[in-house]
Structures are given as C-alpha cells and as structure tokens.
Amino acid sequence: MKIGFTTSFPVEVIYAAGHIPIDLNNIFVTGNGKKLVEDAEFEGYPRNICSWIKGMYSVALNNNIDAVIGVVEGDCSNTHSLMSTLQDKDIKVISFSFPHHKNRKRLLDEITKLEDKFDVDHSAVLKTKNRLDKIRKKLVLLDKITYQERIISGQENHFWLVNSSDFNSDPNDYENRLDEFLNEVKGRNPIKSEFRFGFLGVPPIISDLYEFLEEQKVHIIYNEIQRQFSMPHLRKSLIDQYLSYTYPYTIFDRLKDIKTEIKNRDLDAVISYSQSFCHRQIDNILIKKYVEVPVLTIEGDQPGKLDARTKLRIESFLDMLRYS
Ligand code: SF4
Image 1 (cartoon, rainbow, N blue to C red):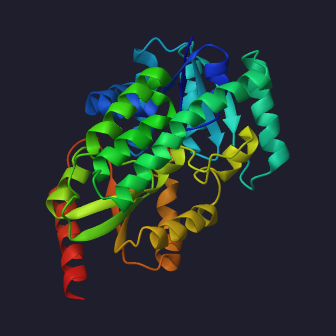
Image 2: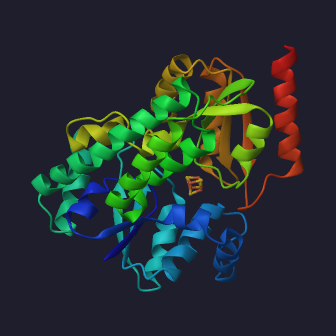
C-alpha cells in the first residue's frame, strides 16, 4: 500500500510492514505547487490557511494514496481538519501523536498502536531501523562535510536531509544515489562565501531561496529541521530516536539543538523561516530572544520564487552584518 504522511514519524513501521511511505510534503513542493494549492481552494479550503496543508490535501487525492498518517500532535493543528476532509474523500486516515511533553510512555503507546495497526512486530521494526540507520550515518557524514570541508552547498545539504523523511520511498535507491554523490563531491574545492549561515524552521516553500543566498555569498551550513528529519542522533532504541527528534516538541527543545549547532558550526547569523498562517511564527519571539547571533526572520506563502521585498530584506541584513 502507498501510505502518505504529513510529517516525519516512525517510518520504520511502514517499511517493516512492507508498505511504501510517501512524504506528502516532498511531492507537493517538487510538483506543480501553485496548481495543487488552487485545487484545494477550489474545493473550499480557505485562502488564509497554510499552503502546505492545501498542497498535501491535493497530493493525497491525486496520487492513489491508500491511507494517510496524520501527525495530529507535535506538528500542526490544521492536520485534524485535513484528515477529516481526506476521510470524506474515502481515504483511510490514521493518527499519530508526539506527546508535547516528551512523555516516554505515551510515545511508546503511540508507536505500539501504529505497529498493531500495520500488524508488524517490534523486532521487525528494529531490524528496519538498523537498515535505515546505515543510511542515516552517511547523512551525518554529509552534514559534517557541509560545515567542515565546505564543499557541499546549502541546497544540496537541504535536498539530501529533507528527503530522508521517507528516503524517497526507496531506501536502496536513495542510498546508491547518496553514495554516488558523496564520491562525486570528493574532488571539489571549498565553496567561496562571505558568510556562514544557519537555516531554522520548516523547509522553505520558496524554490530559489538557496540559489539567491548563494549569489549573495551566503553558505548555509546548517539546515535545522531538515537535519532533524535525518534522525542524526542515531540512538539505539526507536523510542529514544523519536524522543531526540526536536521538531515535534517545544521550542525549548529546538533551541538547545540550535544553540549547540551555532557554536559547533561557528555561524555568523541565522535565517528563521516560517510559513504564512503558521502557529510556529510565534516561536520566533523566543528564537530572537535566546539565539546569540543575528536573526533574520522571513516568511513564505505560496510555492514559487522569492519576492522582491524578501530579497531586499536579505540584502539589507547582509549589509548590516558587513558594516556592523
Ligand atoms: S507550516 Fe505550519 S501551518 Fe503549515 S503545515 Fe507546517 S506546521 Fe502546519
């Protein structure tokens, strides 16, 4: 079965059960995003609801998805309504929750419930985890090369890490392509840049953001949430792995990781990206308060290219860094 999902969750369960997991976000953002959003609005989705939700709705309807796993706690409150509208279109929906306060027992119950639903043993799930961890170790290496050797661009780093949420629905193929990429970069010279930046927040809906930043001599060497999708902590147990994953818990969990990585990677500044109409915009208050390097907040709305106003804001921010 093709099992869609709304954000990273214990994907090991789906692979162990012999099904194909599909991150709906990745299909949306690499497809005809504008059309997918319009289609959802045509069905009645309001204009002032985040484009990702509308995009995922259309993707789930257009791709012969058999069931959708909606992360209804720890990601997005809009997911509840997304699930209801999909259920109304005869798509099977399954809920998964990350308990807000990282309650170990509750998370274990959620994972067990999922295993029962897909009729798979925990031992088979752990075997799959070990298989996927072999790929994740290579992603840790890719990330290290990005900030230590500086031979991998911010966009390439983003691409590999963001796609590790479902390993493009085919871990063997993903791993082969990753091996080829890691071989190919070996002969490269370091990227010439003026600034070392981090990118915080959900992956951008803007298609040319990394390209524009590279033109401005900004090297993104830390993609916060994309890195989280790659489960970089490589914990032994499944439960520890998904307790170390910062995205679904509080902003304070994210801040611990952000502050550590700003130091490790010696960042000059960070861009904190958020999506229009997203509750996570409120987190910027605390990001600005606790992050100790300059922070530029930017917002994306519709899929597409950077608008002139955001370009100007980025340029002004870089001037401020240059002359301060
Ligand atoms: S960007 Fe925010 S509002 Fe949009 S789907 Fe993600 S969490 Fe929900």
